Image (cartoon, rainbow over all chains, first blue to last red; front, side, top):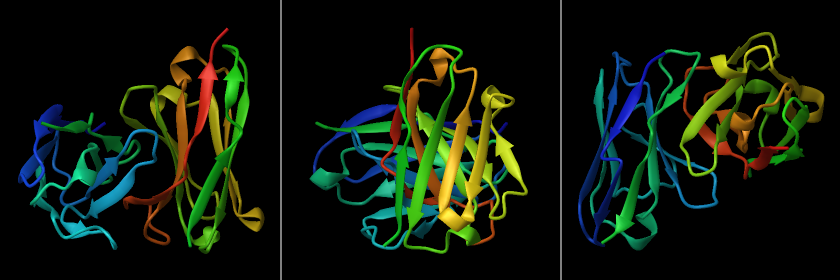
Length: 108
Length: 122
């Protein structure tokens, strides 16, 4: 199974900051990568698919990049509602689809 | 509006069984692959199973093979997960989710239900 590793696992930032989360696949997955946002007690929400395509309705401050094994999720100007946990997921090789372990973004 | 509503969770003893349901609305259910994803308390997301539009292909994570069965009833716009021989490590919130591209399995999950909690404990 392809292993997805996110870094960092958690970090603190302030409103208005630009933040980047990375996701590394244990083998090449082309651009078959999605990013999700999850808030406590809620279902995950799709932010980005195909590594860089913004899901409809997602604010443009979110962006994704990368292909092959290395990917990033960038939030250009953090808003209060962005403090959440973020997951990457590969859907290149299944079963199983695999998720990263998550990155928890907290308020500094 | 796309909606996915899970039900059927609860407390069950180790070795017991439970059947989860997911009622879908707002889209042509029979055109999409569907998935179950779970999340143990305080842990990350784990994909559990997928099923093709017509039910002819099913895939599972290794840890549930032989114990869980995914199925669907397109006439009822419903997805199911039959869970047998449950273990403590199956304790989780179980989400149903739609695979976003009609007819395609290799795609992101664009709509999720609110989840249903399964607790396996004596």
